[in-house]
Amino acid sequence: MLFLDHTQVQYCKVKDKEKDKLISGLIYNGYVFLKAKAFPKEELEAAIKECREEYLDHKERSQIATLLVKETSSVGIWMHNKKYTPEDASITSQPDNEPDVVSNPTNSNTNRISTRQLALEMRSPKGVEVKTRRQKLKLYQRCFLGNEAVDWIVQRVKVSRPDAIKLGQKMLEKGLIMHVLDEHPFKDEGLFYRFREDDGKSLWDSNI
Image (cartoon, rainbow, N blue to C red; front, side, top):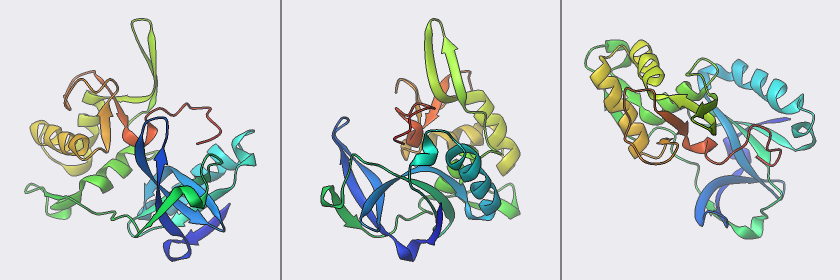
């Protein structure tokens, strides 16, 4: 594992050929890395612990080059992906980690909060419970419940449940979270949602 500052890497976009869409990556030392997970910058120790326990100590993932990159408002875990080369990538500037700031009039300590930052915190070890869940006979990996996310937002941001639903919907509209089947807006119900970064990823996919 290497611990780098964002000024030491080149951010890029690569085309996911299977889903025909552009995804964010970075180039370091001639290799392309994709983000596996991100933490708020205040949780650097949690990011280091996660990197060690979930990636470096993992039987298969430990064979994959891993970077811990300190960005403007977050710390990202990036893993080498053999599917892509620098020739596949188009260089971009560092991603803006604080777009779309929303207001919270009920709490002066959090009266301005980024939906991206909120999503990062919600996806961290202190966030909502993300796990494989079953609905009827089908399993859905890496998902969380809408009503549990509302509970978490209410506690984190100190807003009402209707306001928490609005924040969740903003995250969905910004592409930070999604309904597992893309069939519902964000609701205060036991529906399954997933962080967009986890879409299509298996818990044991060593190429992530």
